[in-house]
Image (tube, rainbow, N blue to C red; front, side):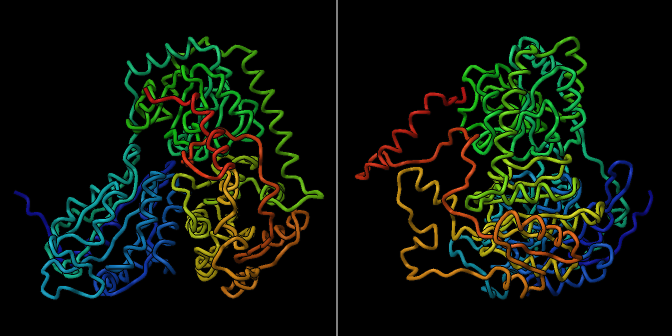
Length: 622
């Protein structure tokens, strides 16, 4: 019997040594699977995990965060830039440090993004309990802050013995790399267990090369989907974010071209096709385009590829004809079968190849494709007018248009919360595939700058000459701006557009559209603010080391953007936009929001009646 060698390490040392030995093959090149991490140290992680990380600081670079939530957003932005093929870890101390990661974990979970959380926990022995920052549950001493991560983690474990990581670490990585189950993994690391030693098998730390699994779809499911597609008189393809994660952009385009089928994009699927492609009919849904929504309303067979069909895509399930047949090609079983879809569970690239082989000779009727292209031409003309500067109040769309006209094709654009995701989705004209990150899975304020920082770290590893551009409203900036400082310190340049509309203007718009008075969204309408004043965002950004300037209008923004492109460090451009005028008014589907069924306000009552008028179009999911 061969003697198995061992090496004595602490739990923390073994975790970091294991991560250091994991690699992944991407397009024939091997990369370290974990790109490093984001960390803020405290008593719950500095003495043991910090000691282990120090010895691997050259191969697993540790970026010092300013806020744990921002660290999680940065890890998500990194993973998205790498199309889920590489991840970063986040380490936080026990108690509030770890609790600050909760929102970022939810964002990664909603967006199906890999992120490894290595978080301090209370002592397993309980000898010093209650310790600093420990929450005591008198009826369950095992229950703590870290248990709150169970609903927002795809894999969760609390390490109570050093040997457990022999199974737990491979399981966490397998989850993060699985196309169907991809999402955040959480390891709770009690402060004593981190430092306990164990004789680990040396084989555990041998160099391992991972590859992303591609699941071939079931032959019978493909046949059923093909039978439905061949009957289609008005077929449509919905291209979701899963197309890019599968590396199936070329296959999607070839399939659409071979069969002359119009393609619409989800928010996560923006930049699957170039803006100028004749079969790209535009973004669909609540923040979509008149063209895509007109096609969706008439389509009789809909092939959904890599899409989770959330309400902004489906118009709360009113965007499609109620008798339209959906085919769900998705690596995730849960997503593939939504709303009576014919499921094709499998990899998008392999699934499209299987459909292509069986669809020879079929093409969509020419009049259907011409209809789609005609409505797209009208939408293109609308966008051109919407983004053009002119004698009207400053708008998000104008700022988007100015940047779009001046950026390079491989520059990456980031947006997340408020009105900007809708405006970017509707108005951005894709110059190259895979260059748009609109985080609307969790629609999370604060992702704009932190997520862009993480994206830039990833971008610099393969495309150092491209820029990462982030659109940020004043509300999101005020919520989380400290990673401007992080980007300056780490020399990971960002171009940040701060568009100030004096508060939470998009929610004010929703408030007004449902008959309510402006209340507590705009600074000018907050009842506890006697007198609002303008914030000097330029001075604030400059105080964090960025170059910053303020422009008066979109016409000046283009020149400022060129200065930002030429700069070698983070550059912040500030511009005021109107809170009431200049919104993109076309392209929206119905969106279900809860409105009062009983009210003394006549305008609210009328808005409720109007809101409910479209409910008859809603698919009931059966």
